[in-house]
Every structure is written in structure tokens, then in C-alpha cells.
Length: 324
Image 1 (cartoon, rainbow, N blue to C red):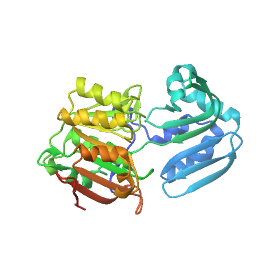
Image 2: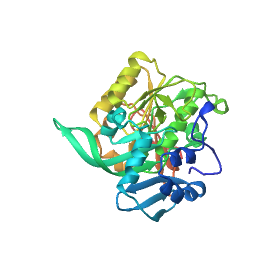
Image 3: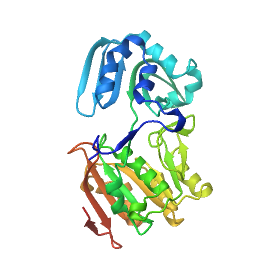
Image 4: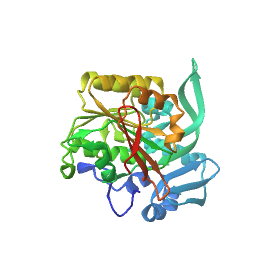
């Protein structure tokens, strides 16, 4: 479980250190800022959901808070102006992906009228709904897992299985940090890590620079499709370890197989509630049949986000052994 007081929380790096609350409040209109400020300072806020003509909803780690304040279209416009630095056009590529990332790695999801060109989303206009997802890192939250996915300076090919909002990306980020910077306590030397960050969630890049600590030897391909990014990394960045979030397509498996055959180890995640749940999926069967996986970590939120349910090793014949 990711315990709030056990580990060190960070949200920015180096000389740019700013409390995450300041970055969030900075992009909000004054009326909304006054409404949410006290909650931001007291609660582990995960999301602030803002919709035209609706009450603001704040989701914390433990509850949902519905405010009395009703959002206006002008509120939405003010937020968009601020997050785009007064040039929404400059963020067109991000907008058509459905979000804008602001300093600190916080993501603002966007909903409205999608404009299609040749069957693809060109942009989103008449924006009426925003979801501010607050980005945090929890330094040390993967330390327990690291003992099971490494041995004698070797990193095992690992799949993390987790339902949504159970801390898998937070743990994956910390795994990247531990592998990249090294862990003397378990005799793990720092290794070259390539992170394929398709949705800017792992390293939380802003203007191409990681806002969160993913280790000193990590290279990040931000906003890059997983298959293409993995192939690019193998060919040009000479990684020891490839890390990416939420695999699910045949192309992902093809790239992972290429990494495996190139001697590159992998740490990846997949949505699921248990081994039984993901066992039915083709992507999981392909990973097993190609003998790519060495370890499987199953997470839940039974005792809070990041609860480790099981850790399995996979033998040469595909047999499962529960390590924890």
C-alpha cells in the first residue's frame, strides 16, 4: 500500500521546485481558486472536475466532495487561456489528444465538440468540461516490489496487473527511478532506462523535460506511441530496460518481443483485477507463449492504492509460483 507518511512526496525538480497546490491554483479563476484552496491544502486531492453549469467535484484518495459553486462558460475560457499561456492554437496537438499538460506534470483533460477530419479527431472546440488530474510521485513506494523483480544486479521482465486508480503508474515511475539510479541496498547498479510515455503520465514531461524523478539514466520518449517508441528506443538509445504503461495491442507485444530478442528487459503494466482476469486476453497469452515474462505483480486498492496482492515468478515451462 502507498502510505502517505511513509514515503517522500515530490512534485517538481531542481530549481523549479514549487508546491503542486500553487501550480493548480495558478490556472484557476479567482472564484474557483478560493473554493478549492482549503481542500487542496488539507486533502490528498486526485482530481478537480469542472463542467459548465455544474457544481465542481473534487475527488480525493478517500472521498468525493461536491462544491456549491456552479461553473460558468467564462470560467472554462479563463482556465483554457491560462493553461495554454494565452495561445490555445499552440496546444492544438495536445488538445486533439484530449488533454493539456501543465508545469508540474498535471494533466487537464478536455471534453467538448470533437471536429473530425477523415475519421480522425482534428481538434476539440466548444470545450465545456475539464478534469484536472493532479500528478504526484511517491519516492520509495516500489521498494518492496524491487526485492522480487531483481536479483544479483539482474532486472526480471515484469508485468504489473492493476485495476484503475490503484497506483500502478506511481509504482511504475518509482521502479524506473530505482532501476535508473540504482539501489545499493539490494546491490542493484544503475541501468540505462528508456521510458515510452505515451500519455505523459510516467515522467510527466512539460516542454520535453521530466517533472518527476525517473532516475539519472532514464531517457523519455514523451507523447509517443508505445510500439513506435519501443522500436525507436531499441535502435537508438541502447537501453538496458524498457518501461511503458498499459500495453494491450498486438503491436505492443510485437515490440516487446523485439526488445526481448535484443536483450533488453521490460517492465510494463496492464489493466486487470487478477491473474484470472488477464489470462483470458490475447496480449497476456502472447507474452507467456513467447516466454517473455519472469515476474507478475498484482495490485489492488484493498488497503489503499498500491496494495500488493500477489507477486508470481514464471518458470521455464510457464508454471506460476507465488513469491508473496
